[in-house]
Image 1: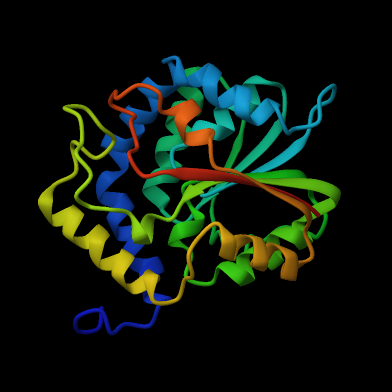
Image 2: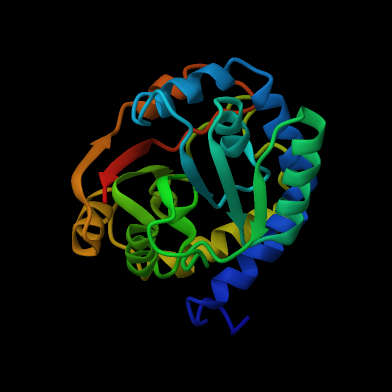
Length: 246
């Protein structure tokens, strides 16, 4: 890492992988508990609203982490491939797949440039990933190439690089087990990424259009639907969902 925040923005990828490696085991436990909670049905309701019904879809889960979305969709009978830059996350996803008895393919791969043939997928889903991509325009262009004509991108995220750090948190929340050192690293990465981003989701809409997507829609109420309760999964940063058609 270069001094201070004066690093090439692509160095953030290495730092992200290191950060999530250190969080992988506890994060996996959190997501397993979420899968067994009422959030299971809430997230499925959001995904089902936009995914074509009546057949199994080929779906790519970019930034799958420990596989939460992949497992929800595999349970629905879809053919899911999950990718993540962090090997420890993918290892946890594979272990959870075995524990749940669900079938999904998992690979260590850069989410900005997934290595699959063009038009491989009916849908691409992603959750809390795009804020962390230093080359988001390139990612959206690549994802457009990977979708079949008429395929859909469903992106859940928030403008985490501009989140308010002073927001009061409940006793239980998603970052409660994150150490002070890890939070310092998290904030450092946000500082670097902020310099190469514009306010979201307005910026995303511009990038998606430039990448060739159409019928782009933003839902800013989704976070209120998902995070109605201040439980251990609670995220205080107002989020959004973007859908776009290839």
